[in-house]
Length: 190
Image (cartoon, rainbow, N blue to C red; front, top):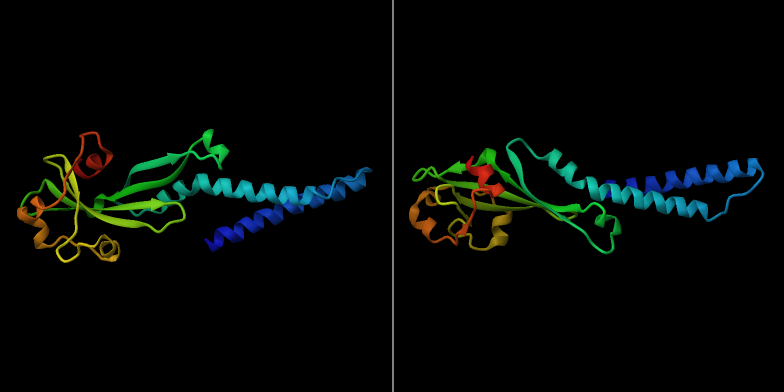
């Protein structure tokens, strides 16, 4: 965030410098460009850089993902205070699954424990452990015994334990059906 602020200031000063050069060149040409050209160019620099960052944030985050983590869904939005987003909607959040570290249950290899990461612009990344039942096409949030508070799960390391492999604990989960063309189902169960 600090680097983005510094880069925004650099874009503003850079564009203001271009306007200053235009003002000096206009004096040499025999007419004078208006003084308001300098803050106008600075504002253009700020807006241009921020719009660039809004659109390329998604690509930058995806490029930083480690091997084995796949994007399974992205959400593009438009908003009235960003009129340019009506021309090209911008991705403001996305979901990635750590399929490289997915662990299959010893009792049923069709049941896999995988971490889902939720990314959102200017927000902290959230990690949600999921149990995916590839055989029955369903998923559920996985909270290990003793960790029924979702806030506690976001910072804890979830490792598949013996409890996660027992069918009795799987029956207690709140399952949500997945279709065969669901990107999460495809990424984990392929």
